[in-house]
Length: 271
Figure (cartoon, one colour):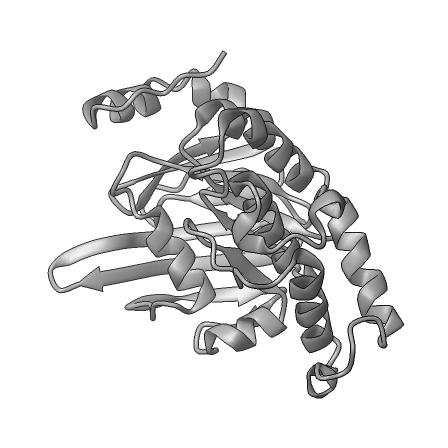
């Protein structure tokens, strides 16, 4: 089991492991006035994890990701990346340390091609930002890495196409390629297939699942079939707190999980 999650100090639900987590939250809480959006969440993500975070609308999933990445400041609790407390670090410093995310809505340079976009990101990552004025191709290592990413994310055939003219599924793949160009240790995916045509969703998550084990993945997704196909471990978040976690089979057959989804007018389906 790759992830250990507990509900809170008084009612723990823990799966034992002695492996050092790559990402960990301790008693993480976020309050907006009198509303508790994240309630004492303890989570451990181990090296190479393929882990999904699910829950009904309003459960606090995106808030939790925003806390991890520094978009929001926690009311209390701590966040650790490879054993280092990053709770007070600015978002861009967390990225530099290997904690990278994608968003529900893609954020790309519409007038640039995938090759240009990835070359720019790789240049920045390698500390060559000041040389961006040079003609594309003058930095062989940059273009080589960009081409590797294009191939990995099935973007080679559209490498010279302006991003705004690409199919939506390809734009989502490009967003993930950009994230991987930042050399993450942990990749946080917030609804990566939102708006992607059904026929392209499987390719997208299959590509993510096949990333090197050096990259640990935490996925937020509403498509349960994709979640169960992708994840080795699933955590269920309800009202900002962890209800339970386990294997896909355990979650699919958990009566509490089914009751929560039905109670929110949603349906948990897999099979």
